Image (cartoon, rainbow, N blue to C red; front, side, top):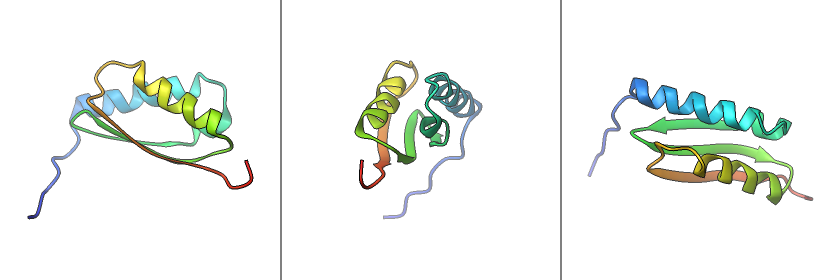
Length: 81
């Protein structure tokens, strides 16, 4: 079965902007570099952070925001941390 994802809506762009702003306000440089993709309320976080603690901060920051129906965690912790 082939599934074609709907293009992002203005609400998706606004939610992505809110998430990006919240991550930047944590004052952790690694979180500012995470990729945030939103489609129909489904949020995917991608990128690499320096510790499991930073990864947890990123996830918790998203959970505190309204408008997220599903959160996909694709954040990796850099090796050696």
